[in-house]
Amino acid sequence: MTTSEWLTAEVSKLATKEEDYKKRAFFEYLTELCEEQGKRIEQAESELDGRLWNPQKW
Image (cartoon, rainbow, N blue to C red; front, side, top):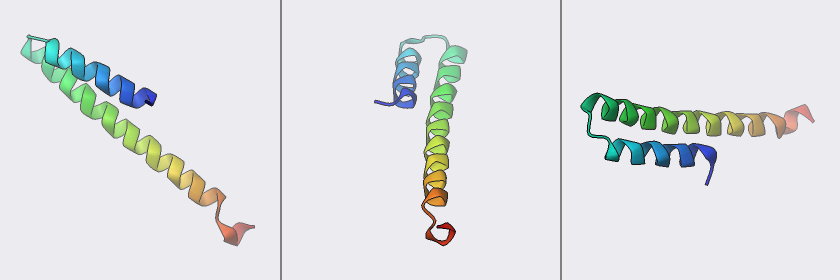
C-alpha cells in the first residue's frame, strides 16, 4: 500500500465517522484531492520513465 492509498483510506474513515456536515465535506474533498495527487504522481513517474528510455537519445 502506497502512502497515497493509505492517506486516502484514513481520510475516508474519518469522513464516514464525522457527523458535522462541513467537516465531512472537507474530508470528502480531501479524499478526492489525495486521489488526484496520486494520479498526477503516477503520470509524472511514467513521463520520467518514458523520457529516460527514449532510444533516440542513446
